[in-house]
Amino acid sequence: MKTNPLAIDEETMRSCTRQVYGHEMWIQDIRCEDGEFTAHGLYGHKMLPDKPMPTDYANVVLYDDDGRVADPEREIVNRPRGWRFIFPDEGADVYTLYIDSNSVWVTNDEGWHRGGKRDYSGVTHSEAFNMAAKRLISRDGVSVGNVMHLELEIVPEKATLKVGEKANFTVFYEGVPIKGVKIIAYHPAWQDLMFLKTDAEGKVSFDVKDVGTYAVIAKYTDEEKCSEDFDETGFSTTLTIDAE
Image 1 (cartoon, rainbow, N blue to C red):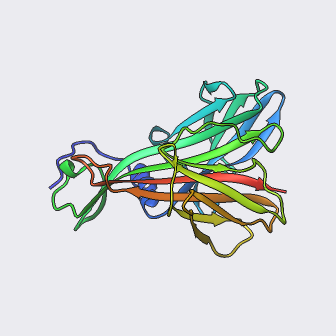
Image 2 (cartoon, helix red, strand yellow):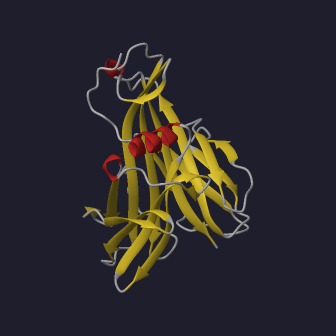
């Protein structure tokens, strides 16, 4: 029987449930005009946007060369359907832009529910979900800076990919390179997803064959990170990176 008295609106429930079933957040369409950067934060699957997650369930965070700076402004837009972020160009060599979202979900005989184990009876699975998006805005297109804001981080070797070369990445968990993390790579020109795993040094690579924006998604579950409300913590981080 439910004990949580807080009602969740239909849009919140729909969006968060889609998160559980494999949707991602990602950042694309970086532009700089009149001294301001703009970017779109989107939510969907295979780089096709769905409706944005409710604003209260996701945070936008920005770093420059010297550390964290003021959070970008954001607004919901229709084309593409999602968030539009705006922040001033103060001349940093590298900006690192993030969106992150954290929520706890459980499942029982009635299905998925947002909330902890104490809120529902007959819980068969419970997990804290950490979904994030990352984008590097590099002045020279090469430097990636040194910011690692997330627990599960994807760091590319270079800020821009080159067709005909290898795309090389290192995945870190809590600041340490991690082996065996599931990686999903995707480009809008592809019909299928590419599935990979990090090696003993936390590295992963693939051939760059198409111009445009790639999504590189790392997924990891920490069974030791638990509490009285959930039994494990799942992480999903999407880095978008352009190839030329």
